[in-house]
Length: 376
Ligand SMILES: C[S@@+](CC[C@H](N)C(=O)[O-])C[C@H]1O[C@@H](n2cnc3c(N)ncnc32)[C@H](O)[C@@H]1O
Image (cartoon, rainbow, N blue to C red; front, side, top):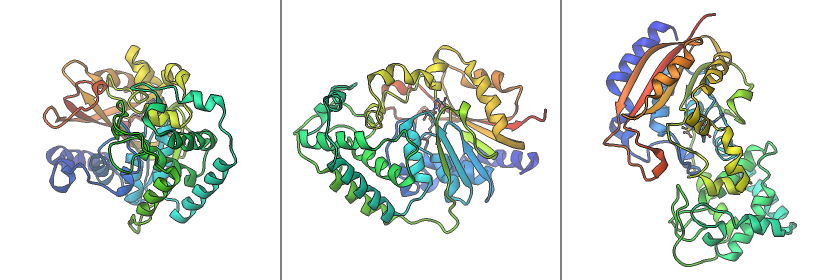
């Protein structure tokens, strides 16, 4: 796509904001895989869908270096592009890998059976049980019947998500992560919330973990895929260390001001192996925490994005804004040696955004910054 075509597309995007129309408004719009596992901070699939559709072409490589649970990469894969997602969060990158590598459900079932066998041969230690004393809204152990907790602890011990797990293992993990807490019958916890594990209420009822995962996998087996879908790639780590093929376009959504991804997602991170120390120390490497004290971290971010793009390629940022903060200006200053801003599109979301979660801040507009890589 050349600059002229890009500018024309922006004009039409600005005029239509197509994801705010018709069926795209529905909260549930999107391929079933988008709902594989809840994640606080996930982009609306309809926004990802239209950005990919309008600003990339079939066969392109679409990269999201701050990819969360892979919403943009998944949309790319479903539209015949190769989606590449990267995230510093072990939780987010595991879920992204599950979604964009499209493993066969039969193979996922086999992996579940292997893990079940491993669990049967494992013995829980005092340290395993102590890990369940941790919690932010309440201790992990307060959420579950003791037998359910024992089964969850065995999975926590054996998933080993830090060791470059297979797509099949990530798929099992994503399903388990999703059903970990909530207020619906599928949830393993006492009554809580599906997105953020608010303090639990109600009875302690035993739920068979493998049985619940299997039920969900049967549902996943019915998912349908477009003929032209392409398998993507998911990486775990900071964008600084990302090493992948060069992209035709980067579409990404950096953390909104005031947002943190560790706290509202804490129990799922715990299941991925995090403990108290990780919430205090490991999370400090995340942009959401770094940008609280200094925006200069974005100099290296734009430099890295520059190096990951093909010549004359484009980059789109999806940002949050409010009367209190101006993320666009902060980022624009740090991008100017690498990218030229082509246009900025604002969407007023003051009436449409419902913030169930306190630390999402006071975002009242969404901002799309369209940029072109500078020739150096
Ligand atoms: C707004 S969220 C992106 C959500 C994503 N679009 C989705 O739909 O799931 C920003 C993401 O940046 C990630 N992040 C923060 N610091 C990072 C870093 N240094 N390297 C890679 N990812 C990082 C966070 O973990 C978070 O998932």
